Image (cartoon, rainbow, N blue to C red; front, side, top):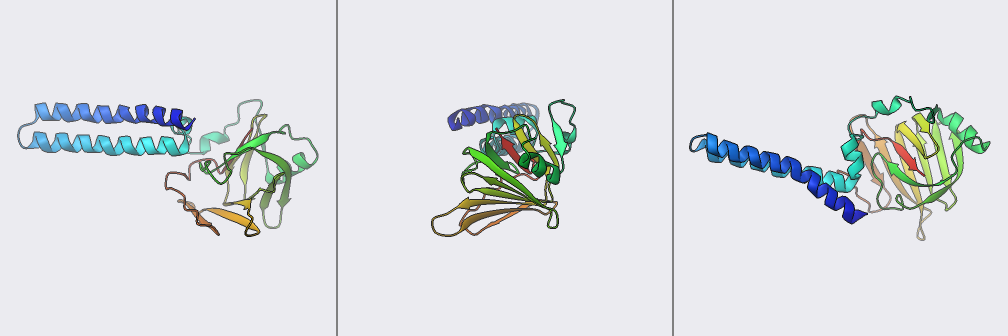
Length: 221
């Protein structure tokens, strides 16, 4: 899968690079010296920068996510015209799950603001329980393998038979078991302008791993 994603990302990134190279050739042929060298070189450099950025983003976030534009805005996800998609509050979601009324009982992979690779996020996890603390406005999702997610101020929770999606949130904590300490903690905080992270481990995310315009939490069955 990683090899396929890399190949597709390479050819997608090649498109803007090729267009800017073509522009560079045209500028070189049309402009007089020394401007033809300056502007044609500038066009090619811009093509290299854009192509490299697009390639890295597709490899990090996934080709489909980038091409679909899900990193640009999450407001479009609030349109729930599909009959199989329903919207819940965190309290409703926890109640539906605890009373076996939620039409979703699958092992899931996890994506947090576009971050999906490593720290067992891309492994399958079986849902165990959902608990909502109304006073603290925290939704806690426990898995059967002792992993857990805590979501603060979850908004616009969408469910279908294939996924559970939290479109907006103030903060998310991903907890993983450890042999050496009680839990490994990976903390994501939405400042309104960016996603800030911290951890009690040495984890340092890449700048392209996380996007504030991505869905806060995506559990894919």
